[in-house]
Length: 254
Image (cartoon, rainbow, N blue to C red; front, side, top):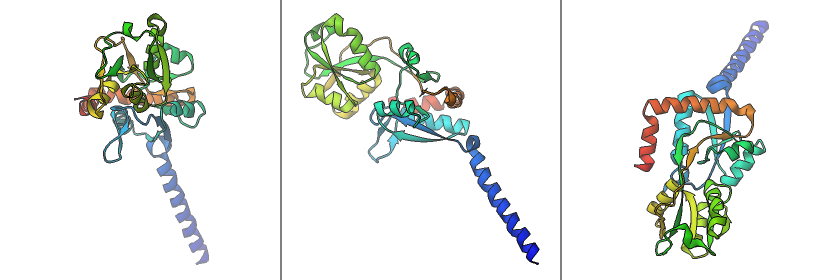
């Protein structure tokens, strides 16, 4: 009788162990990818009126993960902190409106396929008379550290004779323009346009200030995480084909 009870206990333990192992095996062997993102980069990632973290990047990642059956945890860290977390191995990847550029590739960024092509532009205060880069000589413009907007401004700085001041986030950068600490700022066009249209900012985009732009991609900094990029690329292809991608863009961009 005792032997029978022992056998039943052992059988139960085996079943429990098997159930735990089965749960771990679900969703690509139980792997949970740690993905970092920005905090305020509307309409790609931001917090809505109900406190939910939303945006184009957020929805694309969710749709791709559902399509490919992988699990992830999205952490809203901010732009610089997301890069640092990936470089330190504290995050597996980042999706934060990161433009795919040769300079970034050369410095260790490894990108997915592009999921949105974005230009950069210049915006000024609503009552500003600045209509071209020529009017910036001797003045100060604002940029967000480490972004393509910053790179765009830096590429124009010497030719047009202006100074650059750097900020850690977009809202602070915008307030520098509205408050008069800077005469203009440079940012990704969809972000700038959306922020002005929905954020009540007394600003305007300068017509004709856009560059040619480059696509956004998910980025990793360790080749060991290539599996995640492969999953992302496969899922992105599928949601483009089944219409989910267009639904997401229409939801945020109209």
